[in-house]
Image (cartoon, rainbow, N blue to C red):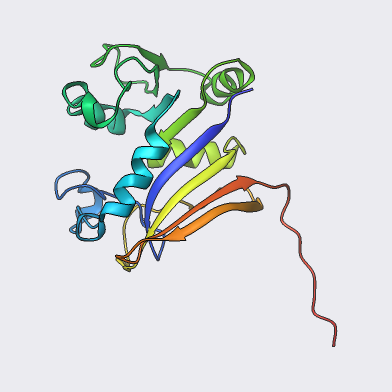
Length: 200
C-alpha cells in the first residue's frame, strides 16, 4: 500500500497560495507571492532536504506540474532523484508531457488514485495543487500531512482546507519550530472526528 502525503507551506490562517514567488500564482489578484522566503532559515532547509530525500512519486495538479517542470529538471542537484521519479499529473487539458516519467490521470481521478494507493511502490507526495487537494480531502484520500506553518496572516487566498472536506481526525507524529518561527508539524490520519462535553 502507498500513502498519499501532502507537503504544504501554510500561513496561520491556512493560506497556501504562491508561497515561493510573486508570479507563482496571482489568481484572484493575490499580491503576497513569496511569503515563505523571509522565514526560510537553515533549519527549515535541512528539514525540507530530509523530507524530499528517498523514494517518492509525485501526485500533482496541472498548474503545479507546469511550475515544477519549468525549474526542477535542470536543478536536480537540489532535489536528488526528482527527474527519475514518476509524476502522476491530474489534468484534462494537458496531453504532452513537459518532464520525463510523466503519467497523466485524465478520467475517474478518485478511482485511479485509489488504484495507485493499492499498488506497491513509493509513497505519493502532493505539493501545491490546491484544486487536486480539494478532491483528495473530499474523498478521504490523504494519509499524512507534512505542514510548515509560517507566522503570518494574509487574510485571503487559496487555503488548504475549504468547503467539501470530509471531517477527519489526525494524530501528531512530529513537531518542531525553527529559529524564524516556522512550526513544522506532521500528522497521520486517525479515524473519525470525536466529540464530547465537559462534565460540570
